Every structure is written in C-alpha cells, then in structure tokens.
Length: 334
Image 1: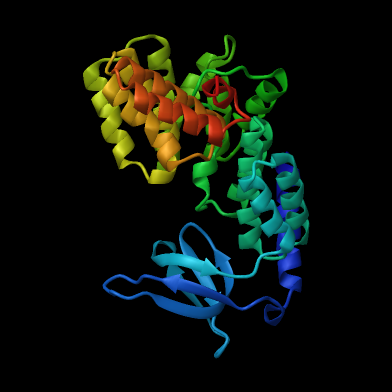
Image 2: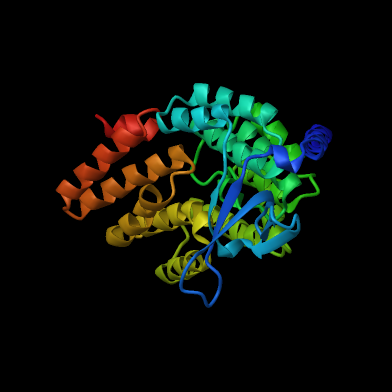
C-alpha cells in the first residue's frame, strides 16, 4: 500500500510540474494579518497550501511569497466541474455519485493542494458509507503529501463500539507497522477492542502519547479513554480532566473525544453534562455522520431523562432529517 501511495503522489508532482502557471486560473487569497484590523486580498496563483503556510505566486513580479496558514481567511479559486458536482452530490447525500465525481476530479486536477482537498472529500464519502478502510487509505495519502495537513480532523478513528470486519483488521495490522505515527494510530484505533490484538493496540496508544506530533498525542490519549469506559471505571474528577483536555484541543479534533466525554458523564448519570458534550458533534462537527448521529441520539436520551422532552424531540427530528442513511438517524425517525 505504501508503494501505491507514493507512486500516486509522484504522479501528482509530475503532472503539476507540467502545467504552466499561466494556464491556471487566477486566484485570490484573503488574509487577516496580525495587528491589522482589515483583511487583505492578494490576487495571485496559489502554488501550495499546507497546514503551516500558503505559498502564492504574485503575477506582477512572478515572485513567490508565503503567509502563515493561520492568517488565511478564505481562498478563492476555480474548481473543476466534477469537483463542484461532487460537493453538491455530497450535500444532497447522494454519496455514491459524489464519490465517483470526486474520483473523476482527482484524476483531472493538476494542483496538488486541490488534490488534497478532493482526497479529504473522498474520506468524508467513505465515512458516510461506513467504509473506514477506504477512508483511512485516503487520509494517509493526504498525510504522505502534507504531514502538516489542514485536514487532519478527518482522520477516521473509531470512537464508538462497532464491529470490525476481518479485512479491516488485516489492514489495521498493516497500519500498526507503518512509519507514520498517524497510520499506527489508525491501526490501534481499529484493533483496540479486539480479543487477540487489543493489548498490542493499547501498547501502541501508550507509545503514541509520546509522539512528536501533538495531534497524534492528543488523539492517542483520548482513544485510551475508550478502555476506561469499557471497564466502567471513571470518576467525576477524571471526567473533569477529560473535559479540560478536550477544551485544549483544536476544534477539528474534538468530535470523538467529546463523544467519549458525553458517554462518561452519561455513565455517571450526569445527564446535563452528557447532553452538552454529546450535542457538540451535531452542532459543530459532522465529519463522521455515523458518530454524529449516534451522539445526537444519545444526547436526546439524556435530555429525556432530564425531563426535557420537547428538546429531546427536536434533537431526534434533526438527527432523523440530517442523517437518514445512518443507523441512529433511522432509529431517531421512529
């Protein structure tokens, strides 16, 4: 698998080098620079856009300039028709059609940074389809291209109890031997509750909590909470520490940890806190529709226990409307 990923990325680089910059559409980057009250619009051609910086070519002088990624408010560019079509189809929950459109765009798109955008959309499609192996493979392709990726939040970790197919377990074992910490995190996540390989997965998570990548460290620690919940051994004080750690995470990484925090409060019968943590997902991050719909459903259950039946009903209606193609979206409609 590593060979195919690297081969695909090598092809990306070759294609990008063959496309003259003046043949690409005019772009604009909207920046909010530190200490400035107004935004700055930079007409340019975007050369690359990573988790650390955006590199642009200014047409007038032909020179390249870089700006920190955190200063980027918006990028304006032209998208392939197949890319735009895939976005519309995904919004309309026509996921199979969207995946085909994004695949078409991936073949035709010469810009590496846009290809990473398309791969992130393909991860979202695979998550909607419940195909975590494909989602993981696509995610690792993004990381092979940009270790600092802005799309790290789409990493398809497992947070809720679910069955893992034999093929997924096989792939997870391969990921556990990968050079990338993020790949080993994926493998450990898939195998954490496996009867035979669960102990190895726990050991890997412990090691990853010393990773040089802060995102991996944070998520590996949060993944370890799954075993605490499984053992029914969580105190109010420990859950408060979890809450503090979740608040310190970037917004894009909070969905899964917030779900576990909600389950922990629910276990302690703190249903107001449980509902607050669980509702974070449908309100703020629906990257993983199956997890988000489950969190919303469980939040509604906690609201019912608090006697807030009208609020619980509204949450159920929203989950049924937004996620009708998921197990918990279907359950919420009944």
